[in-house]
Length: 185
Image (tube, rainbow, N blue to C red; front, side):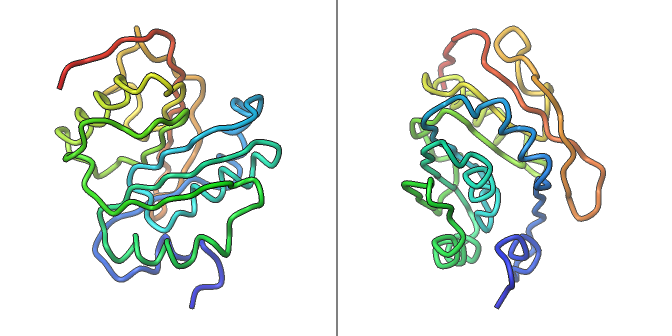
């Protein structure tokens, strides 16, 4: 058994490459959204659920609904078993969906969408960005792909923060929606 939820990011027996934000990086990102009384956070590629729990932990005065989407059956099963033991009291609802986002026609309503999308294909990223643009409640996007996929006339990068990807020096970009626009699938 792992000593912490964070250990699950690296200790699940499958071949996927998973990265994570550092605790300090999450604290920096949360500083931009603390003013909200409630948020729904969607993590596409949620792995163990560690990032969802960490976001909620850093927003103690904010009511948080947490939604994770994970394609790996092993990680989805483990996260469903472990997450309840690590959730802070402000995490009101949580759900881990085992699914492939490429089959989706819409995102669930959310304010913040996170994806550590380093290994996502171009087709998957294009689909995710379209889903994000068509989600009217979505205000913030956190992505390791940065502005390569996010139209700067619609999204503005607020900041970048360091992250861990099996020791890389990669960063995550935090975007705010500056203009509403929808795209057809």
